[in-house]
Image (cartoon, rainbow, N blue to C red; front, side):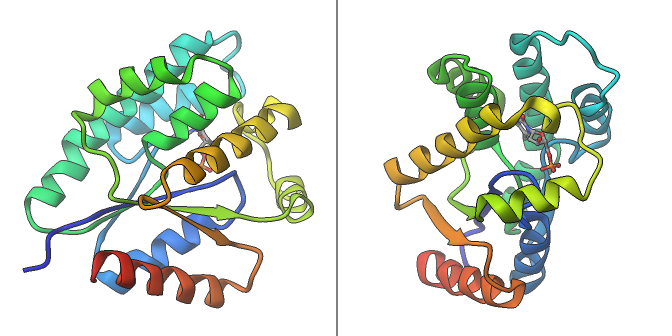
Length: 202
Ligand code: TMP
C-alpha cells in the first residue's frame, strides 16, 4: 500500500485554491478538508475569527484561536485519516498561520511556529502547493465578494502575507511547489496532478 500523504494548498484569498484542492482530492481519492473550520468545533472558532463583528481581537489571541482550530482539526480529521491509510488534502494548513499571523500581523514567526508545532503534534504537510496569481486578478476577485474580518486587513498586510509564502517556499523547495494559478483551471489542475505524481508517487 502507498504510504498516506498529507498535502496542503496555500495562497492568498481568492486565488482558486479551494477549487484546486477539491479537484486534487477527487483525483487521488483523498479526504478533503480545510482550515479554518474543518470540524464542528473549528466552525465555532472560525466564526469568531472571520466575523466582521469581532472587534478588537488581539493578534496573540487570534494566533491562539487559529492554533486551537488546527489542534482540533489534526486530532479529529487529519491524523485519524492518515493513520487509517487515507491521503489528506487540506485547503490551508499551519503555513497559513506563519504567513498571516507571523509575516502579516508581524508576530515573531518563530513564536508562531513553536505554538503551532505543539498544536499539530509535529504533523506537518508532506507537500505544500502554493498558488500564485497576479495582483490585478486577485484584486478583481476580492472586489467581487464580501470581505471577512481578516480579508479586510488592508493591502500592506496582504502583501506581507504573500511575501511570507514566497519566502517559505523558496527556503524549503523539496516540500513546496509554486504554481501559477492565473492559467486556466484545467491547466493548473493538470500541473498539480503531475507534480503530486512525480514527488509523492501517487
Ligand atoms: P479561506 O477560508 O478563504 O481560506 O480564508 C481563511 C482566512 O483565514 C484567510 O483570510 C486566511 C485566514 N487564516 C489565518 O489568518 N491564519 C490561519 O492559520 C488560517 C488557516 C487562515
